Image 1 (cartoon, rainbow over the protein chains, first blue to last red):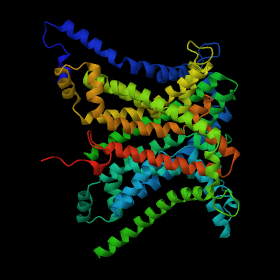
Image 2 (cartoon, chains in turn purple, blue):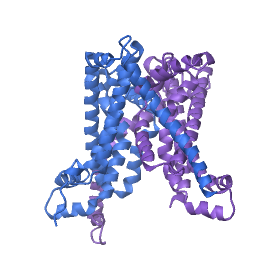
Image 3 (tube, rainbow over the protein chains, first blue to last red):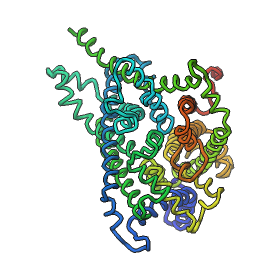
Image 4 (cartoon, rainbow over the protein chains, first blue to last red):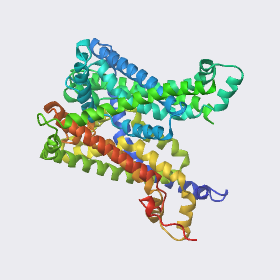
Length: 298
Length: 275
């Protein structure tokens, strides 16, 4: 109840209470100043720059410049890669979570894989790329193993350093992330619902189509968007795998910061704003869907 | 009939679990085996020796450890008093502070560092990127921002578990100043939360590539990428070393998170409560 002592207790001392409340604001000044300086102001700088000419006048030309063939191709590549990796991650992560939670796997297996997922979802970046080069690169363990069995992986057109290779690498942090974020939703499926459905004569598929599926749907959609955003922002893994030959949006922005490859600094700001918008929209939808899903978890 | 259906339901989940475990295990094993093949015809630890004996590696690694440590220190000094103050005095401001500290999860680090480089560039009002010291400070600030979501959540959860209002009142009744209350009463009670946030920060910043590379710092992340382009076996050794390190940090974090205030670090060393 300490907090209330700082508010005016009666009408005779409102002035003193106000002053103390105003002083209380000073306590968060360091945090707000830091956030303003190193987080908010840099973002504002980019957002404003996206709508300015190099001379400082207002323009929409930078945003229109995002439709240029090479930039639009980058966005399209990024979006396709993120969709593919999020879709694979969602499906495999959901299957794994279902197997572990509702499939009657022993507890140690579930605890082990959940703990591993905590590590693996943080094991992105450069080392992950190295591990996959040792696995599926031209001299990787699995590539060589398949060759020994008479199956030349790279003759099929597959390459670790292309679209599906990247999607498969992303899966190493996407599937664990899916397992971690979908677990509460699966645990929220009450056994009573299944029992009630079965006693009314529903088959397994019928239960999933009419009860389990609709309850889980917002959570699964939300997690899919989280995975999409997660893949969209991935940069270090791509660089370590492909150098900077695979021009997804973060790579293009990285090169622009390095050496102004777009020959227009303000176009770079527009590119950054485009990335921010995609991240913000997918995250907002994720939050909205999660709020919708939590209705069932009470 | 019941039994048959049950076993039928078990085979599918078992296969899925096995496939996932295999997918997780194979790249680690492949990297491990690859890292041992540097010497032709036999398995050796040459790749590890080659990495660990390199001065470039040591300098980059030490630089990143220092930067991560500084980021942890700054993050704790920034987040702990703020989270405490907001809970105690300004609960209405909580959504704002929470929103700001979650923002770095949404904003990709390449966008963040882009804005920082331009805002603190050579022609700006505060040209940090023109000096070595300034650039190092900017790197640390960037790492503090990156770790803000994890640090804030850890510390805020820690504070939710103790009754800070009552603790503060008790300390003030006994005549403690505000600073003393934070340092000697609040801090020890949320130490486990802080340690857990610190380990997470460390594991994020140690191998960080994007910010360090764009600020031209000779840090561990850019070093690894360079090594990946120049060498064949050493990168695999580094992957194994970093995975081991991440594992260790996460295990320490778990241990810190589960430890209650006043409890010893090793569970078996706790004294039994006296009757």
